Image 1 (cartoon, helix red, strand yellow):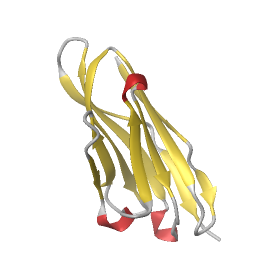
Image 2 (cartoon, rainbow, N blue to C red; image 1 turned 90 degrees about the vertical axis):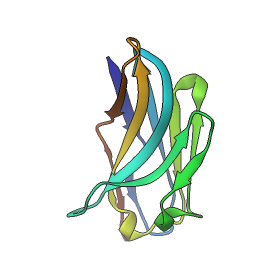
Image 3 (cartoon, rainbow, N blue to C red; image 1 turned 120 degrees about the vertical axis):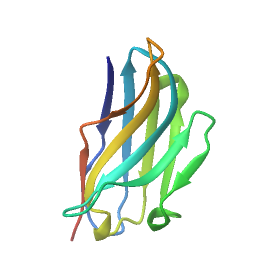
Length: 120
């Protein structure tokens, strides 16, 4: 019904940059918000950044000034530009889309996750 697909993860050295992309597709009426979450080894899944349909953004304190979230509403796509990466940023990054589907049912849909590893 609704699919969320991330891309852009990989291995990068400390201080490097990556840009993650996430596209939502399927029987979607509208998207209320999209966000990025991450889960490091042995840790809970935490919100990294989110953005609403009106482009209001929210960031975790740990990534403010380093990460930037943006979206292309026409393409149902959200991006996460990650700069000045640190080893503690290593995690599986998940994209979430809060949508109303074709039958006007609200739901949260998750991508499969993409691995980001920051290491020398």
